[in-house]
Image (cartoon, rainbow, N blue to C red; front, top):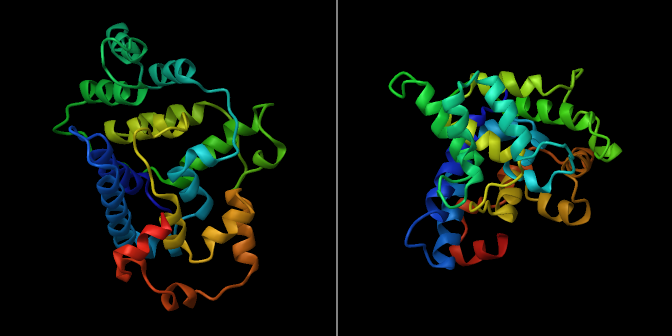
Length: 257
């Protein structure tokens, strides 16, 4: 079955606790804790990732800043989409726009979305996680990019199977299904920034497949690199034959981040 976006949010939350801590960790301690978080996450979800998740959708969700998709959604246009999708009254729209005033210290648009959704729904009955999948999100974002003239031709075709009806209405439906936490991370995903969170890319690539880091050095486009990986016809046994990073000495792990 497809891979739920809530699982990605679990990892992002854990990394956010590392990089948003005050007082901050020393850089080497933050890097180690982020590696530990990724190792734990892959240990928990590794089987689903390798056998169920769409690879392009997973990597694009974890590293949105590396995708070649171009769309015309910025904070202000996304703010309007969210307001419409959630049918916010004027008072809640005001709360949603607080990200514009840096002096207020209300955080980015993602943080404002999270607060607004929490205010609109009773947190006691709000579901912890939705059934929205990374594949659904990828399909919606590819559809929007396909209608953007600025998007390069190779980034326009769908990375997933199926016909896409490109429309921001797909984002409306996603926001209507997501609880507060996932709405926050979806907003940051669309805007291509999880800052201050840093996802250790080389470690993620190695855990996904031992050959992926080198392939991405040659072909940085996720769909193209994964296509090459499939074309190499490498047996699934490679995953089991290669040493697990969870079992590697920590000093050797430093070379994978």
